[in-house]
Image 1 (cartoon, helix red, strand yellow):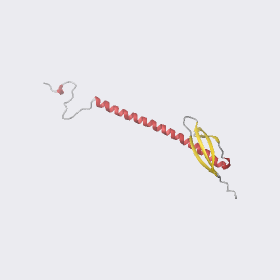
Image 2: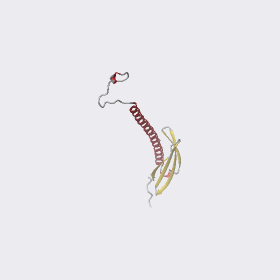
Image 3: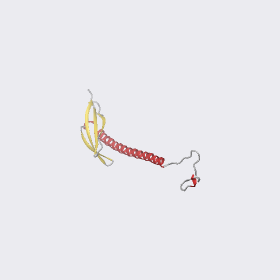
Image 4: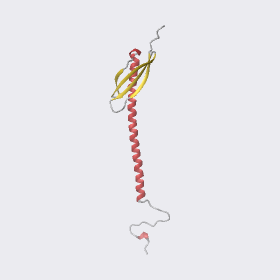
Amino acid sequence: MRDESERPGHGPPRVGNESGFGLVEMLVAITIAMIGLLSVAGLQLAVATQSRMAAWRTNQALAAQEVFERLNEAGYASVVTGSDSVTVNGRVYRVNLNVTTPANRVKRVQATVAPAGSMGPSTFVTRIHDRRPVPPF
């Protein structure tokens, strides 16, 4: 009788618990690796989306800040409800202002900033104080 290792297509005989890496194990390993790679790609897409949204929100905040600074420079008396357009980083933002007077010599300014695009508006609030001297009684 011939030894198994002498048959064509067979390697040396296995010793003890030695085993090979079969086709099924290889397919399972490739499947697990693909799931991992697809998960990383999905995470990268989500991070890119969040990063883009953060940049839009930052630009909206910069637009509101620019309008608030203009209002501060113009003075308390000229702060009124209205709208304005501001360009930040080459993009035009529409800023709607709602001004209320919650206390004497204080105006509350609510700015709703909306970009020209699919991003929704953001709302920012500040208070502007009358810096003129208090009139005598």
